[in-house]
Image (cartoon, rainbow, N blue to C red; front, side, top):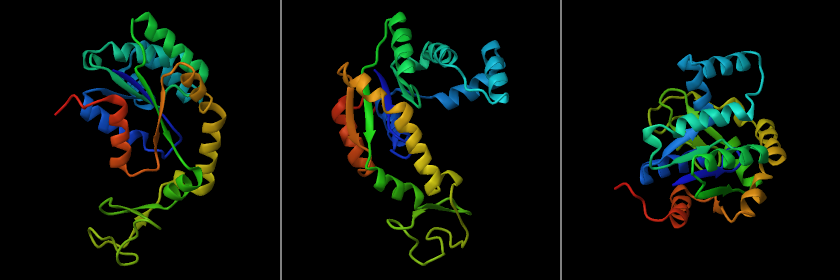
Length: 219
């Protein structure tokens, strides 16, 4: 079973991908992880990717497709894979379809983690973490019991991710709408697209994913 997860930053794709990986025995494939692994391998492809990244260039679609093609040929992908972070444009989606067809494969499910953008911005920008133990909190939905004191370890220092700032989140959402959102009608026209409420609790979203995929394969 081969799956693509779509949705804007903060929609919960990574969380659901891990649950799918554990429940159905699939392999989560992140385009970012594959790029870093290619560079670390020192292969001719990896050297080409490194040169592009060091020059500040975007890695072209054909190179990413080759990386995915090589990766899904490995034994651990025999039961299937989950693509998270790719495709990000209609040309990438078309290239992915062509590559899979050449290998006699196809996408079985394309799942969109749908969101309410105002609520998503609130969810992301309100996050903060204990600098000592890493416990996670939220300004509105999960504040510390004692203001300024970590519930877990009692430390008083907290951090926020730089990319969780409101202006950064809005810019990332705008980029998603401009480039990636057009993929949705592409897959919808092929009858492959299903939507899950990305704003729901993790367990509720996971139950909706199970409705799409069927019973988990791994006990």
